[in-house]
Length: 273
Ligand SMILES: [Zn+2]
Image (cartoon, rainbow, N blue to C red; front, side, top):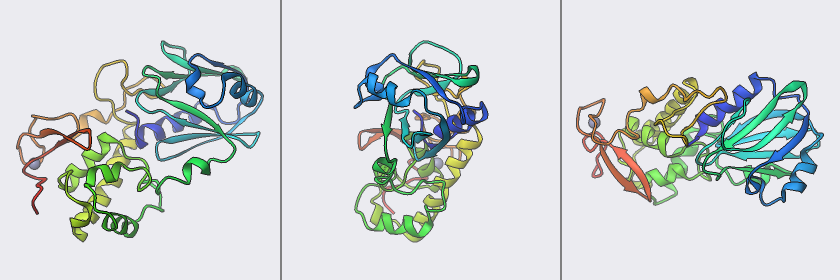
């Protein structure tokens, strides 16, 4: 599932392949709901003939700023990815100038391309991006203290901090040695500072390794080149239920927290503290 590092990797690779500055010559939408709520014809008409001026990212959103002033806001959801070569499950295809073609691939079809006048309609509802200067230790402490919620669903809440999904949330909590069900206002300054640092650290390492892929199935994350990311070998918690903790050797436990599969170390990450 693409989280901040995976979306950042795709945005960087699209830039590196020269997608910025290219004109959109034609649009083919193979799965109409990809562009909802706009009808396909309206989306295509408004996008065709514009230039992709800039590719950027906030949280798990990737943005194409168009020369028309409008913005395409892309959310990859469960299984979206981009490629410069055709494949199965291409839901949307942009023919670009200079012979480039951008294929949006999505096996599970939950990803969306929203054409908006003002990106703030969506970005305004997000908390600070976890890898920007806006996300500070002070902000994080205050945001956690102001709420009385389990820590894992709270750091997954994009209106609090933008970018984390299930994989990196488990990784950050493991690294900070905090149980995923601890209540946010029960955490001490040291614990919150540790978690703040861990969030930044796991995401930074994720970006450096071009994202994470955790399996060989067709829905797994792929970067623009079709590679599955190099972060998998470095994952400490997510998907490692039953395996020994890298820190203490105790078998990691797999459970469900707020409806999300969650893996943690019962020795390093204790609930009663
Ligand atoms: Zn442990």
